[in-house]
Image 1 (cartoon, rainbow, N blue to C red):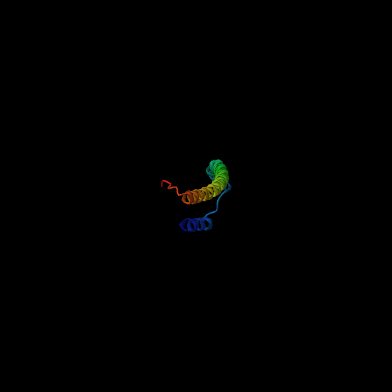
Image 2 (cartoon, rainbow, N blue to C red; image 1 turned 90 degrees about the vertical axis):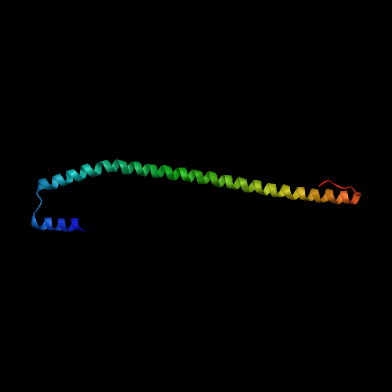
Length: 101
């Protein structure tokens, strides 16, 4: 706020010469130009990070699908084993055989 008041006061009390304006442009140009390269580098870094995260998301999704498929297979195998266990116990009981626990 103080800077705006100072600028406003300066503009009313004195006018800038062409030389003053050229110096201001030169100073701004010197200050801004190095930032342009840094901004571009940051933009490239952000893009690289975005694509890396997107790739990791795809890989994670693939692994999640694979784990889900393995889980379904294990569930089916577990049900099959339970059926076999039930059948074996039934047959053992029917034949009078005592199975170890």
